[in-house]
Length: 424
Ligand code: HAM
Image (cartoon, rainbow, N blue to C red; front, side, top):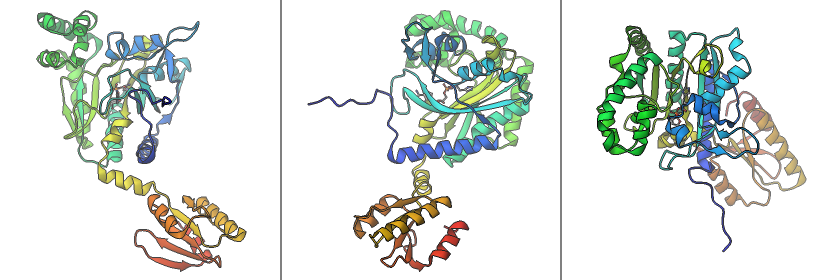
């Protein structure tokens, strides 16, 4: 038999109802990002590999094990983006956006990222992300809180759920982390002979990354490691407390987690992840944090950032059945048009009506002329059409409401008036 080519492991064809859920999520994100005056940007899907090595970090699993490196003739090494933040900062520097008089910048984005992970439920190799980066010379408490507030409330609106909460931690400045890293090194050195080869490498490269290890025995050892809170300066502790106070004021649900470190090297200060109560704690719906040095480290000016990305695939998986049913309804066809008059005059009428309906912002689905009535009604049900508009033999109109099942004659003038007054 001829070979049927299938999609690569860890990728998805997003079709049928799933595409509607995705569209709903991106529409809601766009809407919420706009409410917070976020400017949308697009950046390349691949960049020079060294961008990710220098930002996400050489010792991270993302750079070390999960990058899709491209073979490009006579060019510097290039990789598919494993995340957005590094590319956004590269763009900021290259286009001198930092010189804007309107700081903080709020830059939003959507698109695919690529990580060579072991595919399983909620874990893909092509991942759909949407996120925002807030950038300023020095981030104010207000901006930090605005970022976390957008992260939480936008997700709450998408999921239509009161069960979301943020897991939050403060991982200190680079200086604080050096002290912490030394303590981690001392602790892990005692246990390293029982740990995996990756952890043995991490101990030398960056002991903090041992905390990302997914090997069961290593997790148990890592769980007993010293946490960063003991090494935070008074200033850092105060900053964290002030952020939490503001979150309390805004009724943002959070849980302090001193073990949360995030798997990317650029973070300093507050870091956070989003979860759903009773959901899988290994599958965050989104994550983010503050990064003070990334712009400078990429040879740009001193500029601080805080941002987050959602995993749209995971948001989609976690939508409840009830919300999914609501989405199907909201994203369904408005008017299904069926004509009994199969002449040219009937065709003209149907086309004119369909155009008029669309101009008023409603969607239409015109039944093919050769379809019989019962097939047409079944199709209208499959399309979840809210109304069925019948064009009779004499070109008069009847309108059936699919929910109430009421059907009535309606003259064209009243129908058009109702459309323009958005009564449907
Ligand atoms: P991240 O935590 O690596 O952060 O990814 C953000 C979200 O993407 C995760 O919380 C998860 O929902 C989703 N995600 C990541 N990997 C996978 C996967 N293999 N399969 C399915 N979903 C996945 C970042 O990417 C940072 N750039 C976020 C950020 C922006 N920090 C500051 N600004």
